[in-house]
Length: 222
Image 1 (cartoon, rainbow, N blue to C red):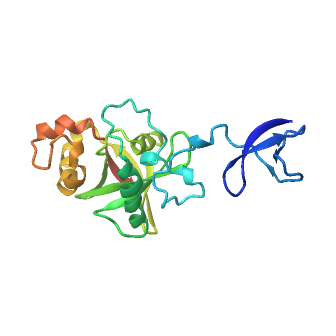
Image 2 (cartoon, helix red, strand yellow):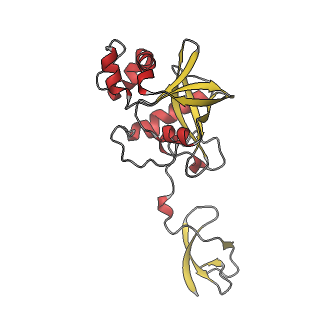
Image 3 (cartoon, rainbow, N blue to C red):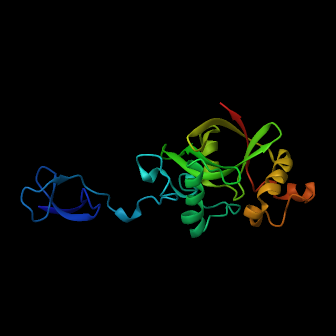
């Protein structure tokens, strides 16, 4: 009999097993032991979960870094979150928001992953400006930005038990200045380091100079 590796049904540990002639897997030395499906060849490469406290789905792996399928990593404008942001801050803000406590306008964005098709979640700041609602990506071409584009702008924003469905329209660079200015007026202390010194009092030319590096979406309720 050939040996293979399987996951134990309770511990999740990868166990050495023997493969019978019928192709099933049995625990190595235990006669009549339970049959298990084969485990992945590399169990240590399972997807990383950014917000372990706030899955909201039966499969924890449906959440990944920045709330989406893995980015290509070839865009210099993308600012990847550090360990503390991924594992502490985002998880804490997401948890509070889903409990109904909006932190300075926070929402949990849910969008379908462009590769997996599974729901992806990440905390965002919802900007209300005049009669409009907007999302800004201070970190650039993030996972959630790519997923929103891939799904035709469809997304949900969650706070507490409330779920609002939207269709997002991405703004052109020459439309972004007033939105970016209002966004920085409210959240500069949180995201100012991603805007290279540009703030709410900067000139239109200075804001326009960084606009291309920060996707902005106007939201319409669906």
